[in-house]
Image (cartoon, rainbow, N blue to C red):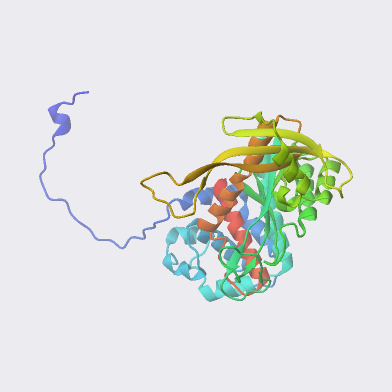
Length: 387
């Protein structure tokens, strides 16, 4: 489209007048979105209810400190001392309803003064907010993923212990168990544990409690569960069958010589796709009372040769198969069950986002209750970001 000369040219008569003013500028204008979200969710009043039993200073209070930590994590900061980078930002103060932000010592002291009742109330708040979200979505199915994640620290903190850590051996850590919802990518609940426990420690009661809360809120929804081999046990499988929960569980088939023999002696494998084959079997370990459906899957893969090679002569890969076994009570085809179970990888992405973007791997205080509250702030920030 052409423009006329008068539209593209203009006369200039004088030099513009420049003024230097004392303006309050912000780098966090995106917080306006969260201000509307906080108002919609009434999060400030809900946080006050979580800490109403504590005697607090009238200056800030636990609710404002927790909300500041949530905003702190939403902005992408890690250590508590990083508050100094935005302590004079007008929009952060406006969002929190404060004229100035607390100093680092006040934040640390407030976290250290929390108790188990505060942790429970804050955890219930997180669960209720996630339930409100999935109720509004009118989902036909809810997929719950369960897995633990190591949170290490180089300092001593109450409740930490030396456990299995393949990256930093001998480091003290926590090992919480998480329940995440695949449909929304949010964390539904968490079980706080020391770092020297097995993945299945307290898992059965935690799993059943999460299922119970979902069913109470959504009685018509179909609940399904995905877990790795650490949760493979007769007690958990029985409990899920009694509750009529659909599940898929990875099987630690290396522990069962019968399963290894089935794989080694199997001649006919049915094609699943271009890279995977499978067969099924009704089987049970010797100590179990009833048989279950086991799906054996092998996948064609390239295994890298770790020995010294001459790269100019040949590619250092060998063709081989990877095997896995899935225990399930679902009535779908083997291909659909395998695809459903492989969706567990989305939970690893959630853990990665929690640690890289929301600082889940940071331990701020020496008290366990303070670190629990901080972890719940991390989970709330993640869930609010998903909103």
